[in-house]
Length: 423
Image 1 (spheres, rainbow, N blue to C red):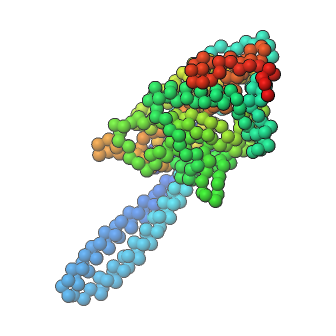
Image 2: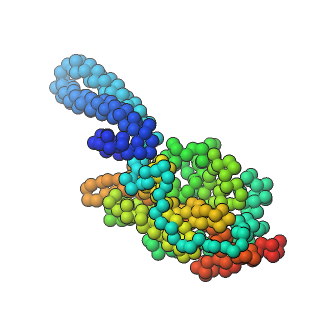
């Protein structure tokens, strides 16, 4: 949620920042200020009358103690009580209208976010493989180890069974990633994947991406599309000691997305599915440290890609494509030989104070409290990373060479050509 104090102090600056996302958003600022004035006026009047009510109550008590007739004071107290209640209801209604205006507004974009309409290329890393043969895609290379047909029979389209050595590859990839993140100061977490509405509202996924979220209406719970939701809510409503910051978590969980609006897009294989596993980085930091933390998370993502031997490029995402909570976002796109292009593999976002403010998370330094900043970044999206490893490690005979860094964690060094594998 946007800082109301900042809107009051710099309405033109806030309007201009929102207009970078969508010119239509700028008009909301004036209405917010009008509702804010209503709320503050009603609140101030109610507090003033409460003071009068208290004074009358004290005078009434003193009169009764002296045995005096206090009929007029009683009548005044009753009238003041009625007025205080009316003004309190008026203030509450004004606050509700104000919050309803603030809730859907996205975060203010960072000045360094790409202006758009296209994303900006930051850098390309690694040599794109020059194959002397027609590249196979990950389904051809995996063969029966990715069973889409039986997955669809069980659960519908965009579900799959992962089998055999690919299971060992996934587990090795997750363990290797978590150990790398521990070395960078992240605490491993396996969070719940069913959450209440507040957690999704707090992270900015509601109201914004309802069409992508699986809901269990009977239980008033939702399946998360990323463990970012649960990690952000670890400190919901808490005050963090500034000396503890930064606090960094690495969450591993299954993730669920309806992929609404993606009909006919990436339907082959496991690049875009409804259920996938992911290791997510999440940081709570002091406001002055969030820009550096963003670059730090990006550097970790790149470190992992380099050690996996995957050619990639970093993109600064255009303002118009930012999610509601992100002020700035980087994507790391990996090269897929079967498609002859880069595809998104990981991303990292600086959400500044937007999520922490919605979740009422604060930090204390001495007697002063302020809102910390939160950041998130994908360490490894398991399914897509397996796709990239298979396609970039493929050989002319259909076999696949896998990164040596994973073999110590139980991954095979090499996958045989699918046609030669036993059923």
